Amino acid sequence: LMTDAELQRLMAALDSDPARTACLVIKWLLYTAARKGEALSLKWTDVSRETNTWTIQAANAKSKKRRVVPLNSGALAILDELSQGNESEYVFRNSRNGERLKSIDKVWQRVRKTAELPAETVIHSLRHMGATMALASGADLATVRDILGHADISTTEKYLHASGKSLRSGAAGIEDYLEKALANKTS
Image (tube, rainbow, N blue to C red; front, side):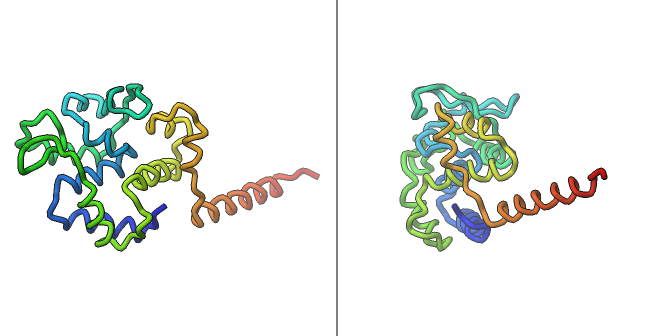
């Protein structure tokens, strides 16, 4: 799990790196909590701007089940940027040959080092981070399970990480509840 400072450094590194499309894939992974292979297979026909959703086709999903992922404003901004002059059927294309972008691993390593992230921060960490941010923002476990495409909710539970901030908030919530309950006591 990345700290706020690490996230800030990562976003700054992504914004300054010259490999723009690969950096946008990395941002997409963070905004959508998708798998790398799902993102690299993304076609324009998989996106609905009417409903602001992305349909991950069964052939591209690890579960081999089709699922629909809602797109937030960050993901939509990426689509807007990449739609300019993109004649390819794929959203993320190689700027040199116009074909589907097949790898972002070298760019990830460079950006990770620029952002001073630990070596154990792998590209899949972005999926964990996205899921954790959704849960920390109040999304329920079943919703996050559906976004991630997990068949079993116990898989999604692995993404629950208690931060110091959420622990303090939880502890404060207990105190608030007790204070209210004690203030309402009847003799």
